[in-house]
Image (cartoon, rainbow, N blue to C red; front, side):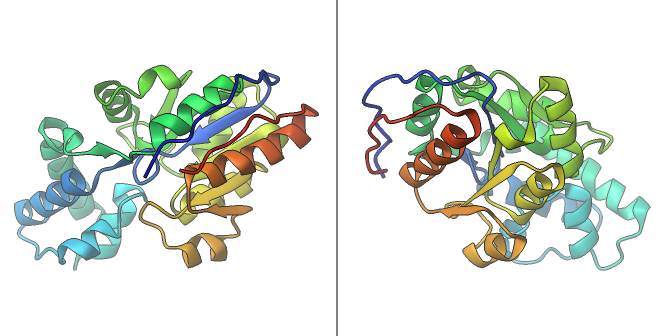
Length: 245
């Protein structure tokens, strides 16, 4: 898949804010997350599901994942599983990851238009920041917002509310881009526009059922939606050419 070229830089009001989920949206973390989940199951002597079932859990908070998949998901057992998961993930799992090929071009196009963009992920900030720096994505973002290791702001709605307050951003000029229903539901909870992307781990019907304002199959589609939404929300006329992704 080719990147999204930009014909020219088109300034837009800085009030526009674009938020990106990380896992399944900016990067494909399947290898590291699946291996770390499997490690956690083995460490607490639980039988792990197959790899595809584990991969389908990429995106939601870990407590939700283990609560759903463990045979006896007591709070103590879930907490132990999370600790073992993070043991492996913090050592090697975080780097077993790759950037989707079309993402750098999309981020460059957004930056050229003058829109602010931040990462908004349920993953702990310490890991999200490390990943974006390692894979040369960090310079595209003003900030990386994630959860705390104790689970604070792991719910997307809580995280987005925190970001809007911290950035003094207006929901009508904010767009959340992600691959799972949690991204869509979080955006709806704070009154922001949601764009679901189909190259990650949430199928199209999941995003549609959650009520995504747009569902996009390519970077070019995402950019076109952003231009439509943010030009209307800010009153700016955005008209740079968009290439196929």
